[in-house]
Amino acid sequence: TANSRLAASELEYREMFEGHPEPMWVLDAQSLAFLSVNDAAILHCGYSREEFLAQSILDILPPEDIQAAITTFQKIGIGPVSAPHVCRHYRKDGALSEVECTTHKVQFGGRPAYSVLAHDVTERNRHEQSLRESEERLRLLAGRLQQAREEERAHLARELHDGLGQSLTAIKM
Image (cartoon, rainbow, N blue to C red):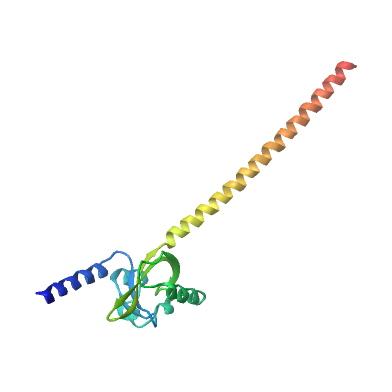
């Protein structure tokens, strides 16, 4: 029957959401309250499902990031998925995570909502920062090496010039 096919389809989509390996959540479009979270989000953030559903996304954002998040959500319209953007949020243990969020405006339970996939980029960003710092140290070291070479060349040239000058003077005498 149509009802059983619909129920089976809903179950498939629910399992796809719940079992997705990346953290995902659904937010109410008005209040930005969590309406649903998957198991990966629970594991990643450390909140229980009940703790998530008792708060909004604004509760886990650093205060200085709240206005930018509100602006980002306001710009998302129904249609194509948003371009990924990096945002930060606190996990239950107080650690700050950087996540690349991809957001899509959807209907959930008959009301406007946002479906968000949050890919953790904290480690990637740390490695990239470490690489930039290493490259900067290497650049400085290469600059110092070049300077030392130039100083050594100048020193050798002076010694050669002075030694040659003394030898020529001695030959003239």
